[in-house]
Structures are given as structure tokens and as C-alpha cells.
Length: 139
Image 1 (cartoon, one colour):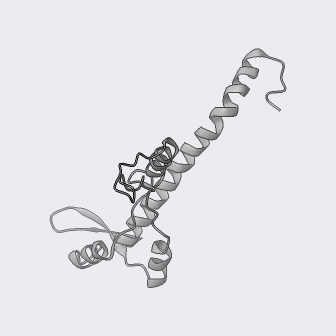
Image 2 (cartoon, rainbow, N blue to C red):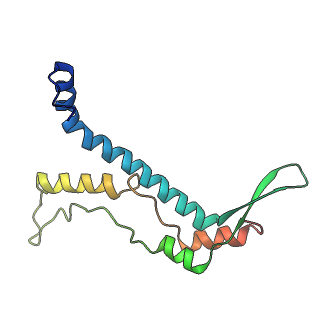
Image 3 (cartoon, rainbow, N blue to C red):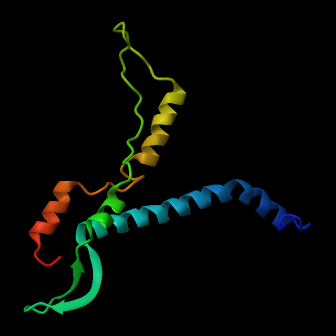
């Protein structure tokens, strides 16, 4: 409907936004999803906010967190943690040098960008959870 206007700036905006719009939408959606994953990770490690603020003897203010139920912990950590695809071995079955095809290298790079360290927030491990919950009495 916007592109239907017979104006040169509107036409150019429509042409550019036709290709740039999905990319912008992907980047914005990805940032929102990473923020939600970070919030879920913090909630698993530290518990839910209670709204109770306490003052410590040395003057510091802290908010008291309540531990989550086992059902809530399971819900927040039940998703599968995907690993990025790899190029594979550089030596074939006959012992010769194997060069991955360009499409295979591109697939590995895109997979690393999407599922690598910057592409998803790692689930908290059981050791991290135990360390946080046992190390602090009032978390």
C-alpha cells in the first residue's frame, strides 16, 4: 500500500525495504530472543524476585530471591542446546587431503554464527546451579 504512491522517494524506500526489512526484523527478533534466554538463565541460577529488599549491617541493600520449584526449573532448562555444524575431517578414508566444498564451509560459518557462543545463551549446568545455591545462603 505504501509502495502504491507514485512518488520517487516512496518507490525507492519500498525497493530497499523489500530486501532490508526481513534482515532488520531478523536482527531485532534475535536480540529479543537472546535477552529472554539471558533472563531465563538468571532466573534458574538466582531464583525469582520476591520484591523484598533488605539492608545488610554494612549498609548494602539486596533483593531477596526465592528458589524456583522443580517444575519451573525443568520448564526453563528442558530445551535442547544446539551445537554448530562442523566442516568434518580434513583427511578422507584413503588418507588423502580433503578440502571441504565452498557450500560446506559456508554452512559451517552460518551455523557457527547462529548456534555458536554469540548465537545462543548456554543453559546453566548442574555444577553452576549447585555452586550458586550452596554458596550463598540467601539467594
